[in-house]
Length: 591
Image (cartoon, helix red, strand yellow):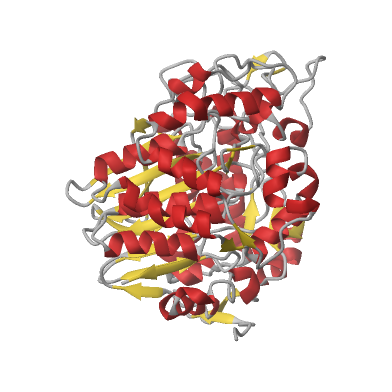
């Protein structure tokens, strides 16, 4: 029987002695008791998470959002596979057992460290807008923005999926094992069935009305009209057949019967057909992009550049904090003021300048320039909340004139961190955007609602918005898969789901490891305090709410809420240490 760990304490750096890191870890929420039949080693990994301890290994490590997926990746590594092989095995299993968060119908960003070359590579598997899309895609007949869920549910929100092409690209470049070996565990589980976890059951119950709008989706998640319950055996033979199809190459996903099924499902679930065509799928490409790296206290923090805002925003937050002492720890109100206003400044720049750089000029270099960040950091020198935060004016070699955009990104998504026996490191954040995506199911997988990450407005007072919808464009993302290096060698892989709060979660975890001396499990468990646009969100039921009065006196609007991150971290040193977010059911496991 699992025990509730009521208080986890940690001796952190400097004056943060016995700093409280997490108040309550509910084993059932964390996944304890659901995966007991997986063997003692995986039960031990779950126990370590619940007890607030990192998992330690010598050779390789996996951290992901579901123990079945972790096992699939671990088995690939144990068989001599690379981090790329493990990534494929994990992703196809997540698409089965965690379908609400990621899968074949979505997209992903990968940050890869190659041990042989010492290079960091990023691959963009983000979804794309159909060629028929226009800037008014999410507006009504009068030009007013649609309500969010009116845009999400149905075919209007679906972008061309990128995950199948990304898996093929990753495996082709860095994989060793046969692709069919990597899909085999998920195929077997899809055909034999798996027990529905309490987390999945709760999410189905909470979304039953939207899931019930489409016949195939309703039949899968609510057989007989009732939502699946925890412990129910769930089979998905259609998904198994789709994976067998993928064994022959991703082209089978983007052409032929599968592509036609996607087109028909999307166009049949929206007002007006013809918005997605077979051509849209057939021309999809994964893009290799230059990694965006920012310095922080002797480290290089590397991640995914545009169309993701993750690496730039995380890099800005850390750059703004570089000149300030954060050693007092997460429960110090002044530390949280600095972190919160640094995030506000980064989000102001993000809202104006960050978008798909294939379509608009993005001043990445200017936004991370040392002099620019020093100028912005000077704004943090007071002791109360900034009364006003506006975008800065970074240097750039083009004239920039964009209006501000605040796109609504609700939390879902999943993150995978892997280190293999050769020292290769993979950090990949993967998503179908909102929980259950568009709610449209095709051939055993859900289709994304990624296009709602675009701005619903195309202009503001006559000024264009950089992240507006355009044909073939990739919507801006907050996903922030990250690899931290020191002296050119990786020391940390980290990332999280959580919508636009991903940026805050990842920056907070990096500060936790570097500034507060936390191990990776402690960093995954920090009570969240997140600011994006001025209001301070404190994680309900944790020590973070103790900051309410002090932050309120500084001038912040303060509220408490559930902040369900899904951090998965691996620290790389003389050994490997893995940590998994106690708010979800994932684990870290290694040998």
